[in-house]
Image 1 (cartoon, helix red, strand yellow):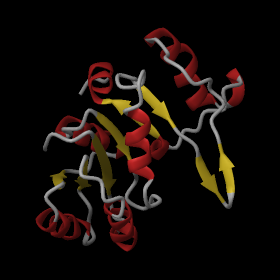
Image 2 (image 1 turned 120 degrees about the vertical axis):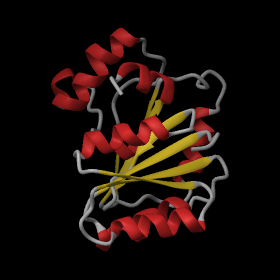
Image 3 (image 1 turned 60 degrees about the vertical axis):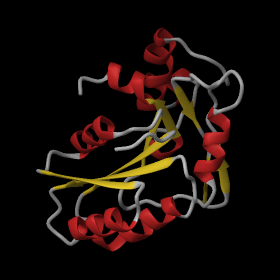
Length: 182
């Protein structure tokens, strides 16, 4: 879509009741380096019109309308269209805290992290801070495939305790695109 630092991809399917809160929470971050890609995955409610409304009003919001293909298909379509150096995902019935993306962009721009392939954050749930137990640092592709990804999918079997929540994980777009058959 454009040349941004972070692309937030929002798969949208029949979440009309929650969609405005989701989009507004992302826009409430007031980041000039952030684009939002809304992927209408064949919604049968008013989601498509809501997506078009936001895309018309905000220059950093784009919309893709496609036939229903499921969540993974919508995420892949958004990743293909993304212009950001990094990508992340937020489901259409979720919302994020104000300032979250400015903080994440600041972390990604720190010395030594500029080309990190994945950044996994923490989050607050019912007042409790939920942290990820993976050690900070650079992980090569082998470690990502053999430690990080299994920890996300299987849980604490590998004693990493990495959250599978998509909205706290940020991927270097080039790595994501090269690693997935898009």
